[in-house]
Image 1: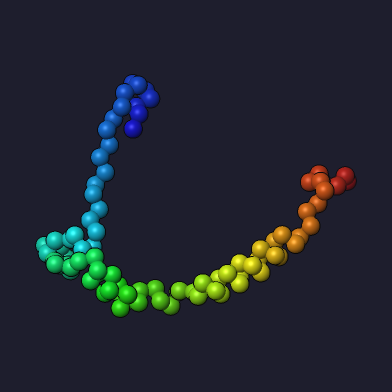
Image 2: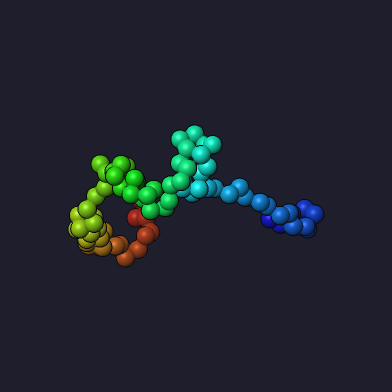
Length: 84
C-alpha cells in the first residue's frame, strides 16, 4: 500500500485462511485427517443449500423471457422532458 502523505510504501500482510481440510485437530470441530475429496463428499451428502438450488434449464428459460421483455421495449428518440 502506498503512503501518499510521506511518499513511501507500507508492506501489508494478510492472514492466511486455512482450507477446511487444513484445520488442525485443535480447532473446534476438529477435522483432523480429512482430505479435500472426503470434505467434498461430506458437503455433497449434507446437501447444504439444496432448497435454494434452481435447475439451470429453468434459469435459462427465465433469462430468455426477461431478455426479450427488456429489449422489446422501444426506447424514446430523445430523453428530453416535454415542455410545460
